[in-house]
Length: 296
Image 1 (cartoon, rainbow, N blue to C red):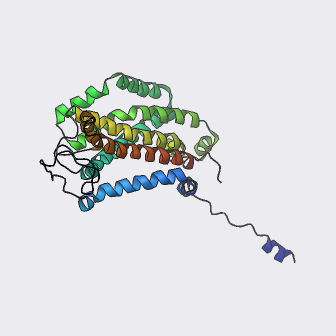
Image 2 (cartoon, rainbow, N blue to C red):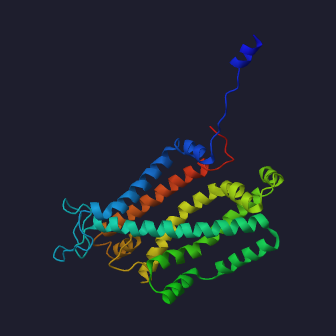
Image 3 (cartoon, rainbow, N blue to C red):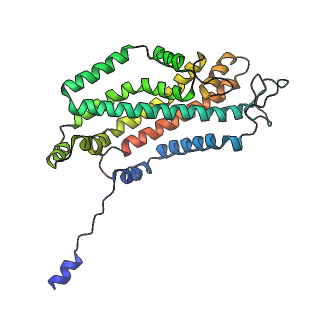
């Protein structure tokens, strides 16, 4: 009797879930985040497939046609050279998204490693590392980028690295402040008592707990990087014709917005839609990736 009763009340096995599995469960319940993810995936797919699905060739132009309003032949109109705006926006999205993601990834790697190291070890090392950040903050980063472009030439890959190299400073400060608030927590002390190395603790316990603020700041960095690229292109140091980006198209649209407003409106909508999608997704990921939030 006792054996059968003990079998009937057996405790169910708890397999548990990983951080990423738990994050996906939380994210799937956030409609705005899913909307942002869907928009972002759509934009990325369209950018990748642009050479196959674009309605016109990128270099195709009609000087006799000139700038025309949206029509059945040209859904988003044409520019002053008779080039289809939908095609140019699709090709421009490839460059803008590439600049945004690659430059932000560079800033992310440098900022997380720098901030986590300074915040975790503290003391003199933290003081020296953050004084370096303060000095770099005081430098006019635009001049730094211009010098890099002048010395090494107008290379699009160098543009990605140069922008990423100046965008990591705020990321480092955010990560440092998060790490300093976490390094004395009980789970970190428990990891020390288990004999884990300091770098293992940083990688497995500290950095995952900083992902929330990092993800949110990342979603704000990508659009700002796109705008920075547009400004550099305006100065003649960024993307150069015949290449194009959303920022470059917006700059062209500003010059003719009174006569041909669609040249500004549609690239602006594409950039704004990307910004909103990233913000919605970032807010959802902030909640989903925070290990300190309770499971639903």
